[in-house]
Length: 552
Image (tube, rainbow, N blue to C red; front, side, top):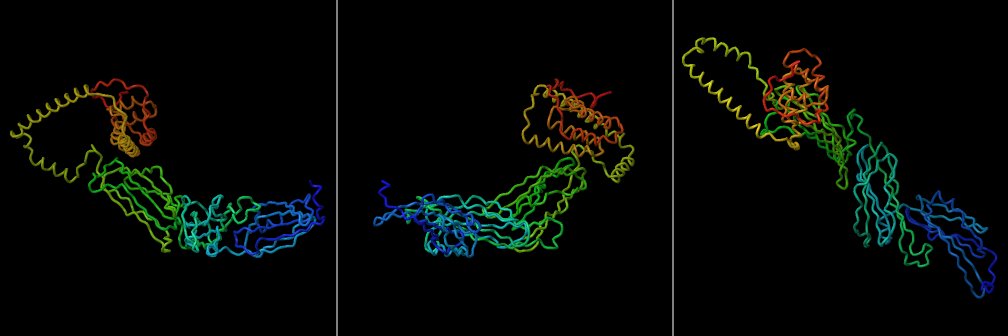
């Protein structure tokens, strides 16, 4: 069959053309390199010279054979999809192929114009913007990119913007909706990003690109088959970034749209006044719109006169409202009063920069004061003047105690004592009958145990052994209600250091033994909680102990 085909022309002619000579940045142009004549053994041209000004999106080749008036001709066409990298007049140099060279070409590339794209009924185009167009170092800016497409397309979503000196993070998921441009309805894919400049000066956000595929019904003989590559580019954006004011000082630089600072948990007028050893649980919260929590300073309280502050583990995080990052820091404190009287927490202030008004503002927590009552069971010492007055009144009436009128009161006292003994016997019998194993403590009991532990640790660092005994037993009973005295507590513990610390405390409390470092050792021994024995508790006789401590 091939023998019947007339001889092909021996000479090969080489030409190069562009499908258009003016494009906008982000658009695709096709370079066609044609070889006519003897196409046997022809290889594709070397395209590496194009990489400086163009992205090569794809290549194809098509070989055709035609016979006209008995004369055969062969044509081989190489198709190259090019995407310009920048605006300007770009040169396409001469290319060597099939022993010949193509003529050089020029392509004029202009900046993209979304309005013009819509007006000319372009199928795919993009928009971008920065809100606001200028700001400060560390201030969050919002970058918005939109992809408009008239018909169904395929491909990956546009990549996030890339720029040196800027932290970029997505704000939620992309939005899909329809919009009208130039009298034509487009589908829109919108994505927002948070931009946080890291240094002052002019920062350029380069174009954001899209590459995909779309059917080309106007060109059924397309080199790319049933689909053709489509691309678009969002315009580059330039932002001006200012440094923090020169007189800001050494405090944290906080450029935000809104900032709040609060302290919650103070007793109200309806609450009972706190007592010595009872913790106050307060929570400080710092929240800023337009700042990540990493930029917010750590929260703390100053040392307090008459109380110990125990900070809890901080809680941090970010949330979004679709346009702005909202950073949050939260810190809880347990404040354990150490003496009765007025406890005052001084005011807390934090200065920040309001980017909406372009002015410095101050967030403040006012000073708070609360009256602290003595610990429950603590003996109140009467004032010296009152004591002297009572003593003088009694001394002024020496015969009052011996007056015959006092005799009935003696019988009343004896009757009261008998009633008390009867009540104690009734309670003992009821306790023996109703003793049941303790259940797993609920959350409220665990909270009480934690508060009791904090109260004990505060007392352990002091010098009052009576308060130490009282708070240690209160803590132990919050975990093991059956504990009656320090002897039972020591017997229930599996740690030798804790038992030794209890022995030393008993000697201080009941024998007056000197132990200058006992408070420090006591707090150190119990700072990790009780080391309870794993064995079952011994049978409780139900009778109160004869001595409140071990004899040695």
